[in-house]
Image (cartoon, rainbow, N blue to C red; front, side, top):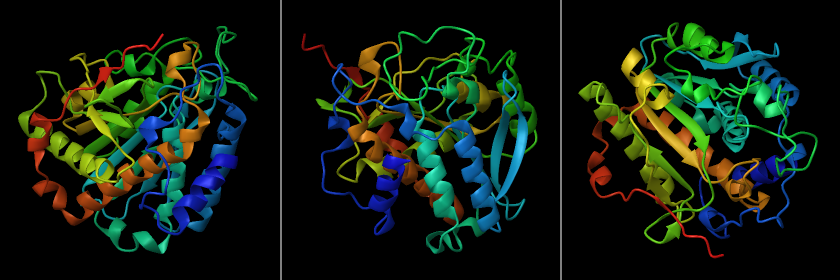
Length: 342
């Protein structure tokens, strides 16, 4: 993948130092002018091949099929389970099929976990990764029209699964096969302590007058256990400190509701898992042009994902997450939408 190779090269020498370029929040939106080509993104089959190659290379990595999509695609879980007594974190990507750069970042992170840079880190933490929950939406293999979507390339990507259902509104009833697979074979099977649910939002959210590279939020349902909420805020502190301090990352507080049909709230309540939502800037495809981000920001968004996952894993592994200062949440501004210039 062209930009994945570029991103890997950018990360290879110094994985978490900022390259000389504009901050990710300043990358151009689509606007009818920017190149948006889905052929540079991993297809489902390419992702599966990539995962199997990494499994063959990494002795601590194991792949598990947790279920199938509406269209029959196997859904994968990547596992690094070194010690059942260790705390466990789950990274969930692409509940929405048109939000793929978090998946691209997760794939790069999986490769990163097999390098010497992570030697000893995974001894203290178990890692679970669902790299593409909505495989049908990511492939545009759906039972409704995508003719108004803006991206070019070999396919369009849509938010919904093949039945035009938003998987991130199905965490109470659990009707869709993808949601059932996640709950039956991941949430109920493994003793998970933390989860980061990775998404994309629109392109025009800002904090303190600057466009954000992403936004974060803990569970906001009143039914969440206070200790689960505290640990969720600590997880957010780790991510915020890692990304917002880079000079190229700029994080706002997401404005989210209390519904438990979404994973951030529902999973925290049902399983007592501390959860964090991370909404990266811009989408890979959409029928609404202002949501789609130009490809010039792809490398940064992948890097932001890797930085997020790396920081969370390290803080849990060494126990420093327990000392994370959550007071920043009291002053972190909730992002607002920048007014249109038209």
